[in-house]
Every structure is written in C-alpha cells, then in structure tokens.
Amino acid sequence: MKIQAEMRPTNSLIWQILLAEEVTMMIGALWRGASGMRAQQVQVDSLANDIANVNTTGYKQVRVGFSDLVYRPVMEAGMPVEQPQAPGSTVSLGTGVKVASIVKDFSQGALVQTGEPLNLAIQGEGFFAVVNGAGERFLTRDGNFHRDADGNVVNDGGYYLAIPAGNNQDVPLNLPPEAENINVAADGTITATVNGQVQPLGQIYLYTVSNPAGLEAVGDNLYRLTPACGQLFYGAPGTAGNSETTGTPGPVLGTLRSGYLEAANVDLAATMTRMVVAQRAYELNSRTIRVADEMWSLANNLRR
Image (cartoon, rainbow, N blue to C red; front, side):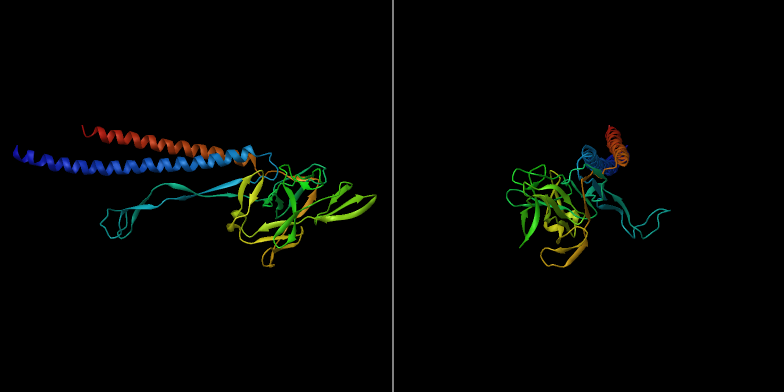
C-alpha cells in the first residue's frame, strides 16, 4: 500500500505531462484550421468581387496567392528515432497557411463593339491616363469616354483623358465643339471634320509601368501609381514607350480600337469552379476545428 501511494503522484505527473502534450497538439490543430478558414475567406471574397464585376468595363480579375506558415520542429536532427524515420533528419509540422499576395491579372479582355467613336479599347499592353480636377493622375483600362460641355474628353466619373505636356505634367484632351465625324486611329491620332474639312485634332498616348502589380486599385476602374510600380513609360499606341523620367525605352504599347470597349477578363466558368473549391476548403478547415474540439473534450474527460 505504501508503494502504491508513492506511485500515484508519479503516475499523476506523467499523465498530466501527456495530457499537456496532447492539448498542445490539439490547440495547434485549432489554429491551423482557423488559419485555413481565414485564407479561404479571402479567396471567396475576391472571387465574389470578380463575379460582381463581370460586366464592368476594363475590370481585371484578382489572383490570391497562399503560402505556408512557419514550421515547428517535432524532433531535432540527431535524436534517436524509431523506424522508418531515418536517423539524423528533422521532423517538423506546419502551423497553417496565410494569404501571401492579392494581385490583379492584367490579361486582355474581350472587345465589345459599341459604334461610339470615343469608346476606346486597348488591344495589348497599356493604360489610359486620366486626371481629376486636382490634377492627380490615374491609370485605367476603361475607355468609355465622351465630350463634356467644354469639349474635354472625360470618362463617366468626370476624369479628363490626359495627354503629356512635358515636365511630368498632363493636360486634358480637348476637342472643338464644332468637330464632327471624329475618328481615332489605331496609333491614337485623332481627326475630325471641322467646318467641312478633315483636320488633325490631337494624339492619344498610352502609359504603362515596369511593375503593374504595384498599381493600387482605388475604385471607379482607376489605378493609382505607387513607388512599387517602378518606372512609368508612355508613348503613342503601337510604339515602344519612353520612361517619363529617364527617357529610356520601355515595352511596346498596344493599339487602339475606336468604337469598342474592353470587357472584364473574368471567366465565369473558371471562377465558379474556383469558388466551389474555396468553399469546400473552407468547409474542411471548419471540420478540422470541430474534430480538434472533440478530441480536446475527450482528453479533458480522461482526467475524471
């Protein structure tokens, strides 16, 4: 009886240590499941936004990237191990997943014919530059332009279609009110009939950046330039753009299609498939949490 009494504290201590280890593992499973649910929620949200903007002119779908979290070593290299684990190797467990990137996919969208001469679509690389009333420049793929009461070419938000004026400055493109039969060529040159004669009225330029992933989407189909964009290039459509600051040549810009608009590059079938996969992944991660919670309850009941 004395020996048994002395063994109880020892057995109780060992039992508590084993339970603590099991609880630690189960808490880890809870956190892993939670991280998976958070990550898949971001995926579902981005896909839902893509579907909502399937008819938005010039909209670019979003790609969400994931990466695994830090690994926790379970067994250090050099520790004695049982077969079939090879001696001298480290056994580690992952701790979950996180969202690593959310970037725009700037691939070409389909062109939709409208017949309006100031509806412009870019076929290839590049953006239109537009400026607000304060002179702040934005880039956009939405070429749904028209003339305002003063003859300025503007988009639906009232932003002016900009043309470079030197010294990193932009001026609005203005067309005389008497201009008729406006035509925009593939290289961006604008001609129109003025007082019965065909006259050149200006040149539309396209812009691009060395790192489009650095553009900040701000709504209204607009992108704000950030330091992450790298160099800004501009030039006539169909030509190699030049750096705005250094003058060095850049990528070849796309051409213009007058009377067309670029549709969103969202593939509904592929997007819905990805939505189903994300939904299932979210469901399975929630099931991981439920299983870990049930195991935790079982471990707690063993103490009684």
